[in-house]
Length: 443
Ligand SMILES: [Zn+2]
Image (cartoon, rainbow, N blue to C red):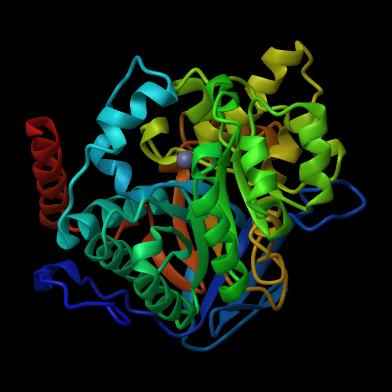
């Protein structure tokens, strides 16, 4: 655990070194879904090629590459694609899975979110637990909108993200009294080649004075602002659009989550402001929030990515997320051709997410020169089986268990179907989360 803010009292067993071998050669990939635009469609399918990875980057894509001493990943019969990008999550929420099962977001927040108490170590454990679950599902980049309850919580949270070796965006929910700690945290995240720093805050007319200060900090630190916006109908009562405008937030670089009940004027405003959107269909279903008008936003040229949204979705199954992203719009419009189509959904999951985060030059597709954030999917299982249409089967039939290899920056985080997580470590993380739940229930 490098670059930690404070001294964490974490047992040595927690640090499981991920040994980065020499170059990696992915051999004989039956299909590489590059996600680069091509004449045939957005998925850019190529067949029977090798991928050489050196210094964390995709060095070469060609047939019959040979390289002495490279670690070989046999991808014959398998599908290789870019790692999945989760543009909205709250990783500490592995401690509140199952909480408030019959509540909408407004009623869910008080007992499930604001009733949480963490030590630094418990924050570390909760976040680390989520990172394993995400990696298992093929997620290589995650945006962690952190409630940042206390500075020690933040220290544990950031340390866990760094130890995960995932690519991450840490969104620090600003409490102005912690401004020194916010600056220090930004330095720590900026020093990590896998990290990006954002500021997070909340929208409400009664909170506008504070949000105005957050906007000033966003400009000063040149940090994007990450907000939940019009997630459900009740957010209208707290005049979020007025707060967005009066605080000046609409004038800075913005990532807006949910945008479920936005009207046409608000969509125009978001497009004009070049705001980016996190579409969270599983969360919106769980909390009975509604269906985001992503087709209209897409028509206006707004960049959209997919978000799991932490415990409100209760799991990190990114394939379920893709199914919901497609399916909810079909239900709403009673039309199987509406945005996002299957290919659109795969685009949102990879290139789209990368664009939302401004990382499109580094990740989001398989292309020489890009960072090696790559997953290998084995379709030869009962849930996938014979291939009729690859893109469709990834969205409609794949599961995390099909993800055999996960690479971030050329580093192997899931190997031949297995996480780098010994059972005793898994049990220790579950025990830590159980202790947090017990504290929460006792309050
Ligand atoms: Zn959220």
